[in-house]
Amino acid sequence: MLTIGKDQLGRFREPPRRAFEAEMVEHLAAFSPPLFKTLGEDQMLVVVRTGMAAAERYGFDLRGPVRMYLELMLLFGSRFDTDPQYPWFQLLLTAEPDAPQMLRAERIHARVTTYRRQVAGPDDDYTFAALRRILQSAEQPLEYPPAQIVGEMARQFAAVYPEKVAYLGEPALTDLIVEGVETARRLKSPSPAARR
Image: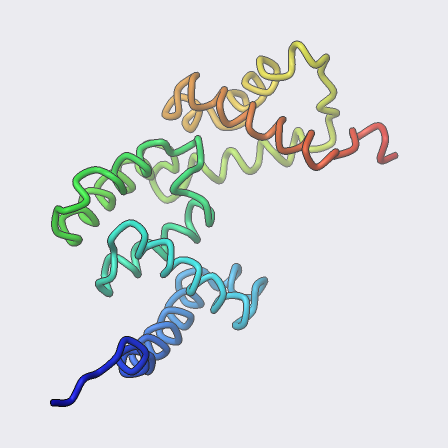
C-alpha cells in the first residue's frame, strides 16, 4: 500500500499555491496601482503571503474569500481585522466560524459596501474632501496638553472627516486615539517642536 506523508502532500499543493500568489500579486497591482508602484512586486508578494496566512486563520481558504481578504488589506490597512476603527471586522470574521466561507464573505462585503457608502460617499467625495481639509490643516501644530490630547484630537478628526467620525462613534474614535498616543509613546516619537 502506498502512503503519502504530509511533506509529500504539501509539495503537491505548492505549485497551485505559488500560482495563486502570483495571480494575486498581479490582481493587487491592478486593484491599487499607486500602492503597487510604491511597494513593488517583491513586497506585494510579502503582502499576499501575509494576507493568505491571516485569511486562513479566519477559516478562509477558497479563492474568493482570500482575494476579498487581500483587497481589504489594501483598502483598510494590513491590520484591519484588529483596527479599533473597524471593530465590526473582528466580529464578522470570528462569528459563526463553521458557516460557509462564501456566506461569511458576503456578510463582510455587505458591511464594507455600507461603510463605504456612508463614510467615503458617492465617488469617494467625502474622502477627497477630508484629504483637502487635511492638507489645509497640515502645517498647524498638534501640541496639546497631555490631559487634553484625546479630546482635542477627537475634535480635529471631527473637523477633518465628519462622516467617518459619525460612523465610528465616540468609543471607537477614543480607542483609536488612545492607541495612536500609546504607540507614539512606545516609539518615543519626538514632538513637532523637538524636530525643528
